[in-house]
Length: 267
Image (cartoon, rainbow, N blue to C red; front, top):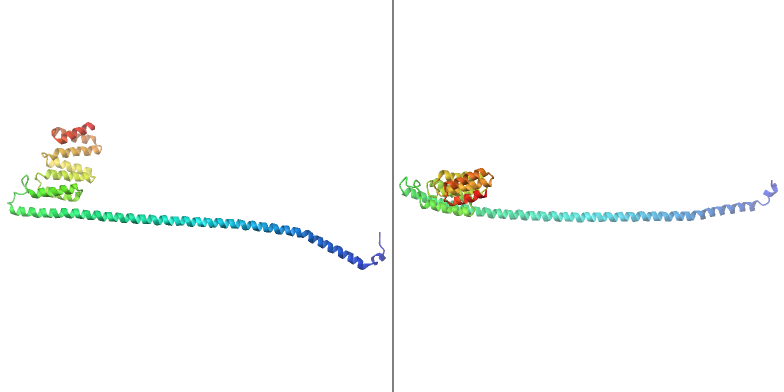
């Protein structure tokens, strides 16, 4: 329906007021609708931010605990290393002290032995100057007291475990008094020193020399018995049996023969 011009011009002010009120109402309605949405968005952001803060705090606390554990582990490692170093230093010092004491004992034993040998050599030289040539060291028992004193001192060193000093004395007897009654014993002890020093090959050779140089002495069957036992310990049963049977067949009434028979029966 078409309105007449008079209708539009009837009350223009009232019409403008009507449109203005409606526009304001619509604006207020829109604002009222947006406020709850904004409030919801703000609460969600706050919750998200709080969750992030709690997550960061938990991670930070975990990192702090890890650092503290690492510090404790490092402290334990440092204490272990320090304790180990302390123990090592104490052990090294203890070994040094032990070595020093062993050295002093060795020097003491060696010094006594050398002094004894020097004194005996001087005594021997005095006897040689006072007795005609050819009468010292050439006959069985020649040299008398000097050889016996050297022998006794060497046996003492052997029993004390001073094998180097003992060897010097026994070698001195063989050099100065090769035909003395104590020479077989001195040679036997030299072979026994090889046994004590874990040299079975050298010991076998030394015991065989006893029989080679002194076949009629009482030490000969003892030496061959020791040879047989050394071969048995080395696992050479044939050589062991050969030397033990030789003892039994050559010196059947000797104490070495009795020992050899027992050894043969056990093989």
